[in-house]
Length: 274
Image (cartoon, rainbow, N blue to C red; front, side, top):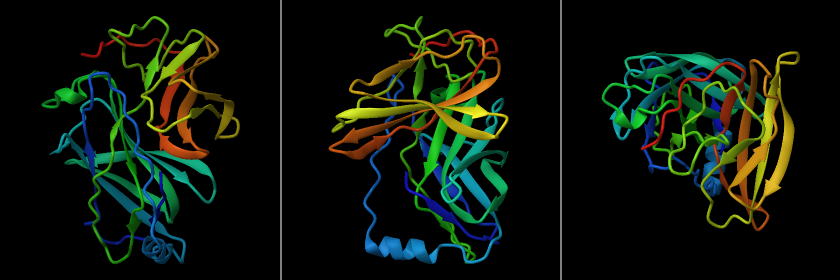
């Protein structure tokens, strides 16, 4: 994922456009490798760097299968920002009005960002592709919000979070389980193979309330597109996130989006994929 810059934006028209796609019946999504950045791009990005501290209002317009997604009845929309200077993530609950998601106060800086739409009951009116419980995510690349008030439209590789596979699931009908889970060890993760990858670097981070930070609790490498880890079975309310980097010839050839999950509370009944 490449970073984007936020500078003070005083224009009410600055809106991103994120396009969601439904994908295969198996439900796995792979991020495309980051594109090369030309010298002209580098110059533009340097010019977009903020000079003075301030706050910006960031807006996103959500699409699914090419149509505006105007209403998510029972799930919040979060914008997760990773501050590249401070190396610190923060997730903010955004407001959604008439299909426009807004984070009203974001400090100027350099970020990687994700827009997360959660569907809890598995029912979004008129959008059967969003009918499964789980998380849908759009990631932002190389976006500069400037005081001139440009309104970029982004058409990005967007999809569902990686699938969390539990031992009782079967290959014939696996369940989306990105909700809160009463996990039993081990927990197994699976993802689509990435062309050109010789290995996968995997990691799990845990959120520690005492420090307010995400810390890595496990890192590993695997040649197969799956991995398992033991987690406490009754660790109530603990939050984790899981990530994968695909490595080929010593460089990153693909990245998966973070999977966030919580351990402890009872989960709803399984919902099988088609």
